Length: 165
Image 1: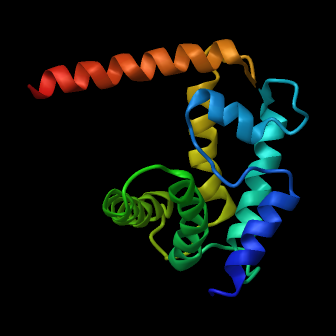
Image 2: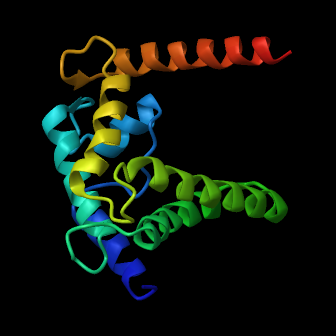
């Protein structure tokens, strides 16, 4: 599997997709705006998701195993950590936390629990992410959508923090 990691990264880059796949607004636009017009249409997003799924399916068998899913995310995570100014201890903590969460995400996305994430199962999370970012639900994520989504997410985090106290 390790020999496929550079291939997955190359495929993601070749497909015009930035390696990271964040769900925060401005990063979302940066990563999925294929024609660089400052917004993301649903068609652009779907094309990027198909390319990412194919790149994640390292052995091209039509489905993604948990190992493939974790390995693909590990490549992106290592790039993010390399660019981070965190201490090595903090990077190690973040790496461990993120990889644990990646295993959990796979379990959630693999709806039929057969150990094989299909494109359809993968697409469910993509549809949810796009809908969350498309604040006005017009099928295009703009900077205004991203700002509204960020404000909504911040308010939700603050409310949750307040409730925890």
